[in-house]
Image 1 (cartoon, rainbow, N blue to C red):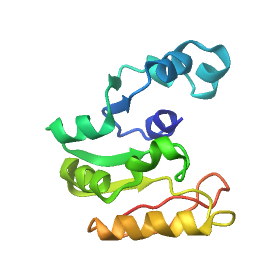
Image 2: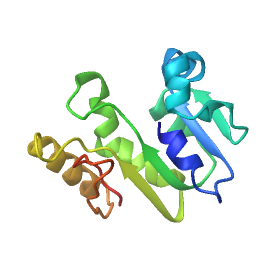
Image 3: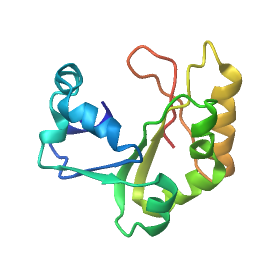
Image 4: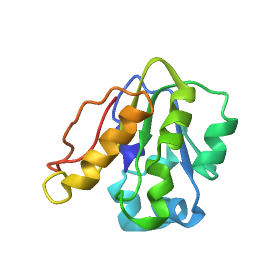
Length: 144
């Protein structure tokens, strides 16, 4: 759904989606309900899907981005924990263009404040400035 939201902006020239699980993208492309929900974003010629581990991809990436959206499962879910690490955020800063922004899903503040503030502290520890924001009525996220 992040790709759908990005494509709403008329100035967007390219969207790179890095996804480890090929099944996730296959569902987004081919499942009628999901494809409709994401407004067929994966058919848009500006969208390029890279099947890769995000850590490895960030280490090798040479492209600079105006915006990086870290649209991950809720923090605190064990398999995704490494993607909320200081190391991961540090790697994202390497691909940000000057003045670029990183948007991070930090979980719901109202129901899981400890997780939310842990993500915020980790972003700051990685050298990023944080600003909390709310998306779609949910109290979650950060934009350094």
